[in-house]
Image (cartoon, rainbow, N blue to C red; front, side, top):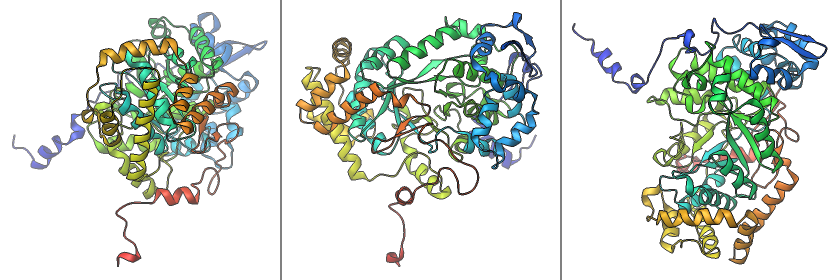
Length: 553
């Protein structure tokens, strides 16, 4: 058949390199509203749930039982369950109904009811609701700081730059697990060269991650995964109660933590019980709430390719972020995994969180080139900074980061590399040379760095974590001539004692002031309410090097 040249060109567009799938409810390959999802129901006898979502208590699996025991606000449950789901959906977009009226209701419905409420909202309505329902007033952003070689000097410089740009959290993960203590150390020292407080983490298996947190090298965790079916949960040798215990361990040591879940994970692991992705995510979020955890990392995260392949997948992802907010949880709303060849799809997915604002718009905006991102690459990386700034400027929205000048970036990168050099010298760790400091100050990626002897570094890292704490690092910085950074670290360790940043959605601003659910709650209730960009912040956001003004004419 003779081909249309227009169709031949279209077939070569990047979007046609992506994978797509028909809905297949029998295996759970459906974003929302599966015919196999349970119908909402709740029956309470003498203060005990005896039926939930069509299932009597004697048939509850462990997830059902945990949710029934700990996840639902029983005081308002009968009232909330008796309401038409459409009426609750309309309350979400009604500016006359404040957040504090809605939360007692949405925390009192069952997982099936919450998913049903989402089915009545289109994507614009989900965004409208998200603007009102996020926990913290000001949206923020989180950055990935990693590199292919686990080079700690480069990582410290990249952490300093990320914090200077305004990221509220920075996280790393090692290419080689034995390097993890140096990764954590690099983010801690580097971040505190830019800001008075830093929330940082090193993603690793849980025992090592917890140890680094207890020793003051990290301050939060978010890779404790929960799942919406019992088979997938037990596949990882976990139960809801073991997850709750682990969450309590983190919190009791002053470590802020979020659970991680997301649409598509149960399908990826082969056991959906024929349920839709969104319904299973609803169960995950009730588990998170029941465990007393302050927040969640969801938005499909590393499973993004699965909901992204089926009809309505982006809508389901936006809905799962909103469901977390409706359960009064901090939400780090994904956008941290590369998933498409199409720049238009990449940004369309992102806009559903960027425009209304979430507690963390990205749970990992790569502060390094994507080939250096050991979290498998992000939806946005450091090459996108200027685009991000212009989008903020175009729409007058706060995407959580600010433009910075080249000179100040060079200055903080140099400071971070030199400070880490001093810490390594103090503890007699493998030498960081002046050439490495110089390279890290001006580097684009790990390809610009001199190679280190990785075997020596890994041995030293294992010794370091056995012998030293964050307090020792503060002492090293002080004695080596970096008193300001040492003071910042000591102040951060004091924050561990007070524990204020364990409140829901807590972050620190550039001056070290805490913002969270208790002292900076979301107060949006229509035009001219809620978070508005302050004039001084807006003045920074609109700056561009290539702006024309009256002086140019």
